[in-house]
Image (cartoon, rainbow, N blue to C red; front, top):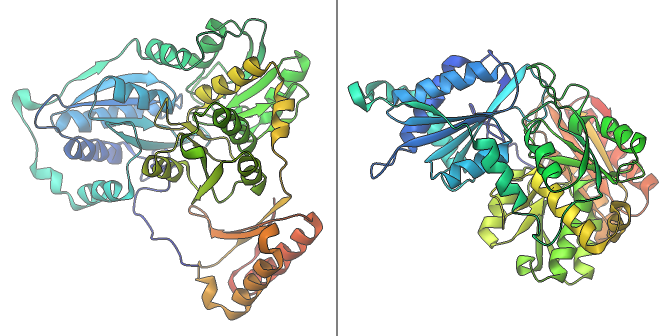
Length: 460
């Protein structure tokens, strides 16, 4: 197992860090804006870049710096203000912009921030293009490329971006259905969806009981949203709602709660939607794309219905890349990121909710009954703090233990080992039929890793 190549700026999902600390400074944002404008310059037509954000206090600082950098390279900026990440992808493509930029750190606390980039077709950038942007920033090559006079760009604000996105979302819901009589508990995490999400569900006829819709720049994700499902669980039970839904700060991820207060994770949502689409011949190539972290119960549910599951490395961008490569229509992660490529180019929490609600209405069944289509296998996850990220196959004692566990599991389970991309951790996941034995296997391997590489960080 080899350590991944270290990037200088970009991580697995854009650039991220503490706001006003390198690399999340105004200076770096300006340089990034210049690099983006240069790379996406279209010599044959207008040069326009969409910039949106979530509700963090530092969004103002980074938005202004990005816009300044973009304009300094001769491109125009279209500012959309607070809008979900998938909404910015939609605006980018629908308005034929050259690129879209999202200022958000997703589920992180308010003092963090991040920047993600979409190409003109609404997809996140491949590794190679991110590397090109890094090279432009770090080489100072752009210093000699400064337009002057009327070649400098302008900034405009798109006042109706929210309305455009709301209309788009409603059009993904079947025309012959509505949400009349539905009671929805909704937590918007004081984030980018605080206006969009309630509007969409209410205009489709639902009664919406809300939380997390009063952002103040500092309360995004603070004891609310997808990281704190206990909030929407309580809201669901207290109001006897038909369903509860919690979004994260940029609304590309969603966690569901059924009418009894039980969480329904992303694997179950993929099973529900995948089987429904399969029955309607809408699941392209009969395939669901997910990551190596998803439960084997998803594979069994889809395979039993005549479909199949394709797996990628962890990260929704890799799921989308595989979907595009293979021309698939449904993919996602256990964490709640779900992509319906027939509708949008990236994960979309509100769009996912609409698809689930449509199935509930079409089948006239509550979420807890729909979720029974998948029986998850026991799955344990151990995190081990490491001092260095060595190739485990080169440590004989650990390699021997890994081989032994894999032979023991055979076709009844699996072992997944990977280093964290952002922390000094080795993640050990074991899945199979007997939970007690899974813990024993994981603990044995953990002790060996501690012996050779570091100290245990505990069990999740």
